[in-house]
Amino acid sequence: MAKERVLIVDDEVDVLDLCKRILLAQGYQVQTAHNGYEAIDIANNHQFDLLLTDIKMPGMSGLEIAQELKEIDPNLICVTMTGFSTMDMAINALKLGIDEFILKPFTPKELSAAISKALEKERLRKENFRLRSLIPLFELNKTLMTTIEEQNVLKSLLEIAQQETKATFAGVYLVENDIVSQPIFINLSPEQQLVCDELAQTVCQNNTSSVLTLNAANPDHQLIMERLQAAAVVAIPMKSQNSCLGVLILGNSEDRFAPSDKDFLTVLCGQAAIALQNAQLFTEKQQAYEQLKMLDHMKSEFINIAAHELRTPLAILMGYATVLEEELPPGQQPYVSNISRNALRLRALIDDILNLKVLESGIPVLAQDKIDLHQVVESIRQDLALQADEKKLQLNVKIPLDFPEMTADRQKLDLILVNLFHNAVKFTPSSGSITVWAEANGSHATISVQNSGSIIPKEKQSQIFDRFYQVEATLTREHGGAGLGLAIVRGMVQVCGGSIRVESSEEAGTTFTFTMPLDNTNLKARKLEL
Image (cartoon, rainbow, N blue to C red; front, side, top):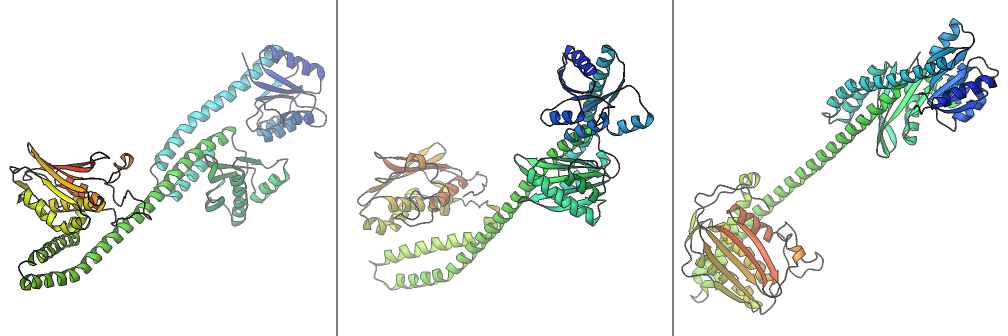
């Protein structure tokens, strides 16, 4: 059963009552008015699908009523009733968008048929609009979804909108901080451009569409139309959620736009809004990428300069250490040997930092050194002995005597163990203990460095290998360091073909355990990730 809402206007009470009865019987929702002024008042407060009006009435004619109500709702279907008709009247009716005529007197069947025909035409029009929209929307999407420039989005929107609506002139704006800007115009004089600027700003502020016609009752609209020298203008915002990203304005110098044009343009602007958002997001990502690239370059330059400047004082340190080692009594020479050995290690690290090819590729070369793990650990233990003695720490080494010889990169293994030992010495409370364990499991070595006392909260254990992360608060922490040690350890362990984990509890303290191949001969190069 029909559910459309119908407004009937006729000054003859009998005709009005008859039409109401006929349409109510058909299932329509009906309201009536005895003249044009009453009809306009009703239409301002209620929405209707169809207007059924007599043409000849005192005060306002049916055509004038249709025109006024079309201003309120451009999609309103209009059917007129008349006892006589002229060619001029028919032409005017068509210009005003009258959909059907019905001649008096008429039968209930003829009235129902006229109403049904007008509604069917509207349904076909909407269906035609949907079909008609598919091709240009498809073309627009192809263009918009591959466009990363805002101006290209606006140009594509403007060209398709003008072509599909046959508009005489057109303009499109981008909205930035609620201000319309960067306009693109087609067939607009400087004076008309100024008017469009004002209209676009109004649409942006209201964030709602505007449809204007030359004979509009609104004086402001009338002035705009006269300044634009247009018979019809439509202005559509490009909405994104509750904000307006842009405004599209189209105008016709002589004819009104088709009823479906506003619907089509609304869908078109919706697609354009999505494309604008994509373009803006892409621009933001590009800017963020460029900034990150610049910061990465600055970081590399800083490391390069800092490492270069460290070479001079290091060379002096190594030179004097060599002189001292030759001149001091035998009992004091081991201390100087420790200085020389660690100076050489520092020089090797600086050489790696200065090797830009390694830094840029991120794929270090793995040496294949024959390693006795006992000697490696003992050397590191001696290097840290003074620091451990200051805190009265006990350093324990529990590596089986039959632990097999390893083929690995000595420098990288040293770097891993030095950082773990240094970390343990730094965070173990006075009079605590540090123990290193090792065992061979098939083709892999498992090595652990355990310290007593210092506990890492469980919720922070997954973050401690991140660069610059420190368990202690930045402003209150007691220990130094930049928070890079464990990140370097994890990166080097992975480069050496292994993995690392941490366990921490009040009973056992904190233990870092890593695995790596006993023989790296067949190990493929891996990217260094810190």
